Image (cartoon, rainbow, N blue to C red; front, side, top):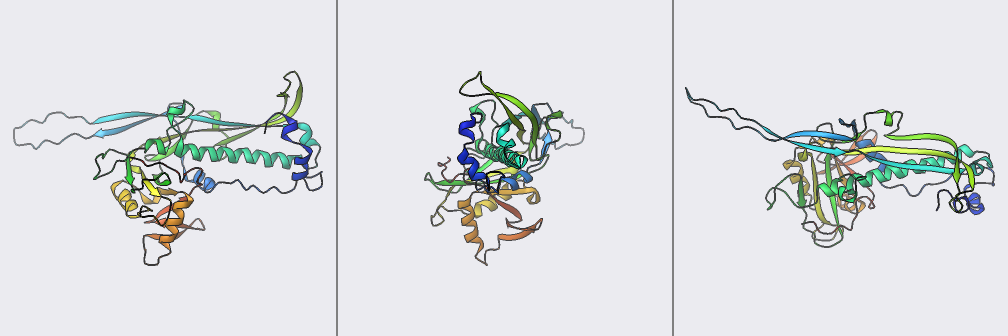
Length: 341
């Protein structure tokens, strides 16, 4: 649907669908909400980027060795080594533009505009969560490195590769695989970043909404023909900073078929938590609906004490060893991953 072509954007048939009597907008049920997006937005803490549109992280890579000293033996000076990492900030933006007469010819035009603007905000939230997990810098400078691109090859204690961050192998070999992500949040762990200037002032959950008033818009079919439109602008500045690779992990190659021998092996979650340096109070576990089904099947066994339900902020949330489990939409965490090696 064209944003600016009013004939394709809002026909009389569309007017009839969204209004009760042709004069007032009725209730519109949004059935496109994605699992877990609003909860995820509440999980991620944000801090200002320390270098404008990028964030500089300095972390240690080694510690000096002590000298076993005897009397009258000198001690050589030693130094630790550090690593410098830069994380970029990117921008999501949407524009809502609607012919003035679309709103002015109904009695509650502001209500219709608010409904349409809310859809734009939700779309940005969906895009943010998708990018958090699936973005890759190889796609261009307007992308970040998401969790999947940072955790893209097997590496864990006991495997041939043991470098951080750890990606554990559940053993699946088909193309119908999924992953679990463990993420600890905090200023020294994982967090979002945004520009430190005035760009984000007045934002709600990081999203800036601006009413641009009425603006002349050119018809997409005839650039010389103009009409007046109500315009709203939405911006979301964000980046992903991983300060400590011990505080993220992925369990990959999980068959989405709960009857498969390569369905979720929950022992790997224990290994990931124990070999990482997770503060479970600040850690979240992210799964898609297929894996949530497997978790629920395991949890219904009353003898399985690993899975539990905890009341967090007035809601019952499933947990594993005290780590809340969040279900995200399969369009965000797919069930069609190929085997990671």
